[in-house]
Amino acid sequence: MTTIQGQGVCGGVAFGKLKLLRKSSGKIQRHHIEDAEKEWERFQNARETASRQLNDLYEKACNEVGEENAMIFDIHRMMLEDLDYLGSIRTYIQEQKINAESAVSMTAETFSEMFASMDNSYMQARAADVKDISDRIIAILSKNEVDGFTLNEPAIIGAEDLAPSETVQLDKSKILAFITEKGSAASHTSILARTMNIPAVIGAEGIMDDTFADTDIIVDGFTGHIYIDPDMQTVLEMQAKKQQTERQNELLAKLKGIKPVTKDGQKILLYANIGSLEDMPAVYANDAMGVGLFRSEFIFLESKTYPTEDEQFSIYKSALQKAMGKRVIIRTLDIGADKQVDYFSMPKEENPAMGVRAIRICLTRPAIFKTQLRALYRASIFGHLAIMFPMITSLSEVQQVKELCEEVKAELREEQIPFRENTELGIMIETPASAIISDKLAKEVDFFSIGTNDLTQYTLAIDRQNPDTTPFCDLHHLAILRLIHTVVENAHKAGIWTGICGELAGDLSLTELFLAMGVDELSVSPRLILPLKQKVLSCDVSEIKDNLLQKLK
Ligand code: PEP
Ligand code: MG
Image (tube, rainbow, N blue to C red; front, top):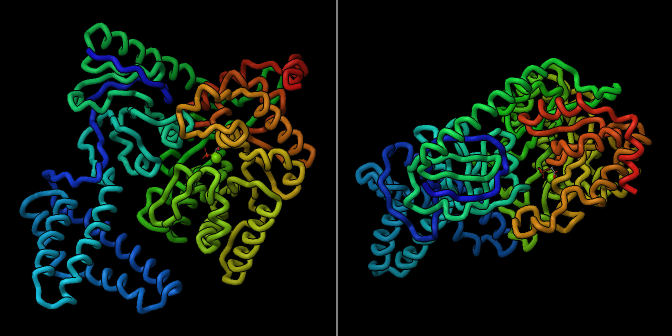
């Protein structure tokens, strides 16, 4: 037995075979594939993405350097339709059963050699072009390699690191646990694991050793231990731990139907954070009173291109219908930082967490934002929708957002499309700036939700993606707790409610303090709802409230 110690970021014990997910190293690895049709489809998807990229490049170049110079991108786009080129790739995939990257690379070599040997100088120049388009497709295929990583049976995934866009593309029903060599507890991949309730360990150095592939392992997401080829004693201990967790969950399940009210009668709303429609069953299974944060950007991360208004509408409508009248707070697109989406073609940034992310993208690309707003307003008649905007730092951003909402509403009125006029609008308080001016912001919106993940990152100057900063990250830092208190006070003065939807909301050691502050709602991953309810039921805050708040002085 080999033991690896990492950091547990989602509790739970999992038994299973380890599957190693390797990403492209830049070199094209040729490997055998089972399903040629599926591989051809993967190639076709990459080809379509390449075609769209070239179209965008053509239009951009037309504006910047004129049509004549832009022509090359149009030629490249047409080459992607060349039947001989496509036929060669298809033959390699179907007859030799090799992966699409190798088929493209071998085709590129044959075709460029053929062009280079021609007498005509125009045709000779095409040799470079065929290499160019092939490199583009290979790059797209390699980036989406996770797409091609299919699990035939449930397994434990080991990876060097996983980006949120890669994680959302994996078949969740087949993942027993995640293990990564890198990663940080506050990253969206860790958050996703917690939302999906999949045991997860990060910082597990050595897990990518080839000799561990396909071995039986046990993951303890509570302690961060990984047991490779475990001995009998460890198997028995871990089975006992798993059963104990299941028994605890059965006890917690008895709290379903009971309202979360403290012993002294203080009420609080317990909502769930979700990333997709697939998480909705966990919302009822854990008795959440609503959805406090639907991270809509995961719809964009799962998609190969911009989701259309109708596609988004049907997802939002379905979420609202499934919630059966409970409030669903859908956060508008929060792309950027660690949540990168290829088809947004965002310029590379030195410091993306402080770059053009979330509301900044929405305000600079209003067409994308308005599509989402239209879909949301159209869905609003199917349940209790609240719309929330991320990464707000100023009053003017809120005003611009509200103007865009009014524009969308006017369009819908004009088109006689029904929507709920009084759909609640809220903002995330996740920057120190918004917390400090929360008195002013509170007059503009219906509610606040405090995003402690980013609030911590920006207040303590801690990059949430960088595990080396963990020793400097005090999640209970006085600055954060004071900011939360200020926000709650300012919200209440203006007569609006405020919740917390960052990971701190589920920190049971802070529940009493949050109740003392008067936080109206806590939104946590579904698996934490019942433990949090148990905690709330055990609290008696009125007597100790002053003492608790005194600690913030
Ligand atoms: C937060 O920042 O606390 C938050 C809830 O948003 P996200 O984690 O998606 O950035
Ligand atoms: Mg955030």
